[in-house]
Length: 98
Image (cartoon, rainbow, N blue to C red; front, side):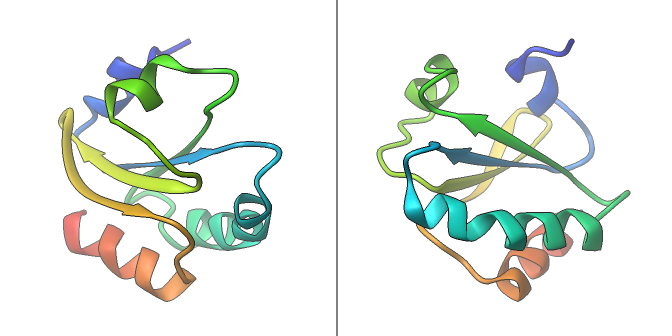
């Protein structure tokens, strides 16, 4: 199994969704994330990180609120967005970097 650091080193953009099970907006984003994953299949990878179960990555990237979305490529942060976001905006950000 890949570590978080191995995962974000990818040539393919990786969108990380930092979330928590107790977070209402995170739950509301679930169907959006599923739709986005389908729309960008092959162009980007979507990974969900539960901040309560995996504390190192959120701490390393100063995730202060959930949901927070961070787009990585070759280990670098290309884009980040705290809070909810609509499907169209998310897809256009991913396509901009893929």
